[in-house]
Length: 325
Image 1 (tube, rainbow, N blue to C red):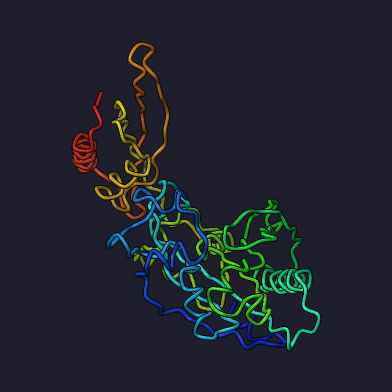
Image 2 (tube, one colour):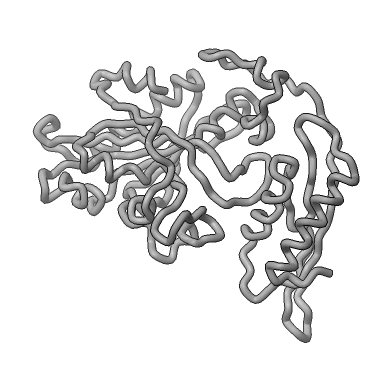
């Protein structure tokens, strides 16, 4: 991706991949116009260090900082952190790339929104083809608080349409806050963001996101820098399913349940699935049953080991206020 952007006619994109992961809530949310009531601000979705500091949830958290420093074309890559569901494609740590290009009207006479969108589409379609080859692409309308003319780019790959990235024309308010928007030089900009694991899972046919954190040489030795090779499964250990049922406490967030399981099981949990819910007709209390799938990528788990983890998970749920059934 870096090579593609450097090969462009105006390939002056700076790259940043060592920016600090702890950012202010102002930078992570307010500066990029995330609404005050947006779910991403909740402690059930974001890792807070202090009330005003978080582990970044997206690389967009560095957008206004770099714009204020005068950067006009850049790529930011880094690890991001979210409390999320547990399955083969979600992990509390993932990697993201943010790209921004600012248009100076002095260099682009008669600059219009349409010109910015056209350049955005041309640039990102070229990037996708540099990654996937000569694939069919399509644009889908989307919504992001930090852009207008918001779009998602999909590619037709291995018989399916796959979402690759989200993008759009940067909101005027963001540029204004960096002293470089319309009314302060009349500049405009586009921005995009994409998940790196999602790309890698598709390109290398990696079935489980946990593998990216594996130190098993049977996984690591399959890949070489600069080459795309199909992942070859080296073993498939049996799953171990455990169910847990409980009456919901007064203040319930599903991500809290996922976090409890992840805290106790770590990478030994493959998935957590809601399999049943029931509302009592008289008390109106809600009960849920979740099925936890324990499976190691590297060895067989013992029943004693899984029972111990499940016991700790149940204890945490009780302390959380859930009434176990």
